[in-house]
Image 1 (cartoon, rainbow, N blue to C red):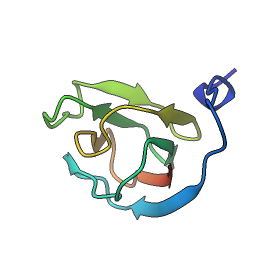
Image 2 (tube, one colour; image 1 turned 120 degrees about the vertical axis):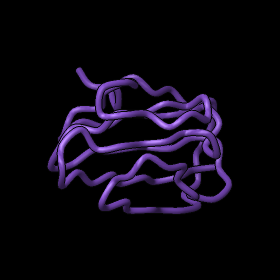
Image 3 (cartoon, rainbow, N blue to C red; image 1 turned 180 degrees about the vertical axis):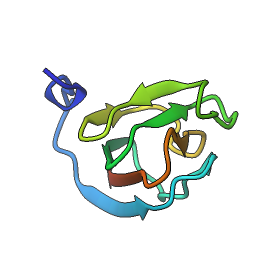
Length: 95
């Protein structure tokens, strides 16, 4: 069971944005306003942090290629970096 199987909404969510990040460098992702995001890593693993600090290829939470996660934290603070060259991150935002 992946992270995408565990999200429980407290009501209906409405799509309000989408962003594809490629290549993935350690930077914040401007994805607009929203309260929840579905984040998917493709091709290579990525690392992420949501405390406003850039992750590195060795430090941060790992999101494995092919996996998705629901994120309900501060969308302006989350940052990603590829663990190996060629990673892609797709982000769908909902309000």
